[in-house]
Every structure is written in structure tokens, then in C-alpha cells.
Image 1: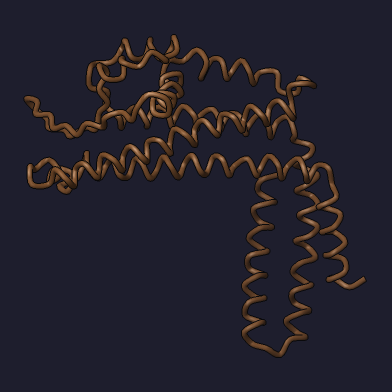
Image 2: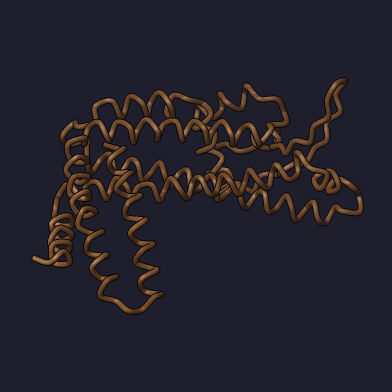
Length: 269
């Protein structure tokens, strides 16, 4: 059997494995994580532009009030996207857990961790209710402040606690969060704390999945190693048979990439 035929056979064997379908689904879940991370970065970068740069200070000048209004609207848009992606991630995880683990009790500590980190925690409850505030009540005012204190100067972007309390739809834990805030709720630490809370949970979540499915991951990695072992000689045969220099260069690059993937597989075992 030629290396090319052997490669195709192994490829077909890999895609036919039930373990491969499971591992692929777990890995595809990272798309929701990536969207959440991207929305967080977009929001945070824009906020830091105001809070920690001369350009932000210039927005407070009277002549730049129109620019400030546009900036505040942009922050609101990015805040909405950040919260929406967080809720989507929560929904995705719940569906994932229900379909893969709940019925067979394969992940018994999942709900305990969810309760501890989210259900019983005022911060995530506030964020979820804030989305309801935006969708069903009104867009919150994003206030650009400048604070002079004896030994410091800061320019936070804030939400008004007084304005938020006009909404009657706050859940119990969200009310607890609001009750512990000053009238100006600093937005940057709010999103940082919530982001870190979510990412810490999913770091734990993926770690537990790798423990629960360790045998499935090992079987998939073993088949992938077999593929990498065949791929290099297959590519070398193609290079020797091909007279086109550009094609050969592309194949050599592919060999280097294959070796790198092989190294990663070997060191992730």
C-alpha cells in the first residue's frame, strides 16, 4: 500500500471514530469562548483608550462633546455584545452538559460549581439582569468621569446606580450587588471581574472534561500520530515526483508544519 493510500485509510478511520466525534464537539465549543474573549477585548481596549490615555482626556473638553457622545454610544454597543456573548456561552454550556452528561451523571460536580460560581454569586446575577435592563427597559447611560483625589487622578467610565434602580426586573442576587455599590459603578473593574470569573470556570470545565474523557482523547491522539507518521513520507514522495519548484516549497512548508503538530501531540499526551 502506498503512503498516500495509507494516509487516506487512516484519515477515514479517524473520522469514523465515535471518540473523534466527541473530541471534535468538545473542541468546537471553544468557538463560543473565542467570541466571548473577542468581545471582551474589543470592549476593554476601547475603555482603556478613554481611561488611560490623553485622547480620553481630550473627550472631556467642551468642544468635543459630540465625539464624547459617539464614544459613549460605542461603549454601550460593545458592552451589549460582551454581555450577549456571555449569555450565549452560558446557554451553550448548559445545553452541552444536558446532552452529554446530565442523564448519565458523568459530570456530577458540574452543577455544584455552577451554583457556587454563578447562581449564588451577586456579580454574574447582576450582569445577566443588566442584559434584561438593556433589552427590556432602556439603554443605560455610560458616564465619562474625571476624578481628582489628593494623590491621584482617574477617568472611569461608570454606570449610575440610581438610574439602574429604576428597573424593577433585578433578580435577588443582582439587587444584592447593587446595594453594595456606590452611586457610580466603575465599569472597567466590573467587566474585568466578570470576565475572569467566566474564564476561571471554563478552565476548570475543560480540565474536568479531559479527565472524564481521558481515554477518548488518548485514542484520538494515537490515531492522529499514526496520520502524522504517514504524512511526511507521503509528502516527500510527492516532492520527488513534482518538478514544480513552487509546489515543492509549499510541500516542504507542510512537512515542517506536520513535524510541529507531531511534537505538540507527543507533548500533550
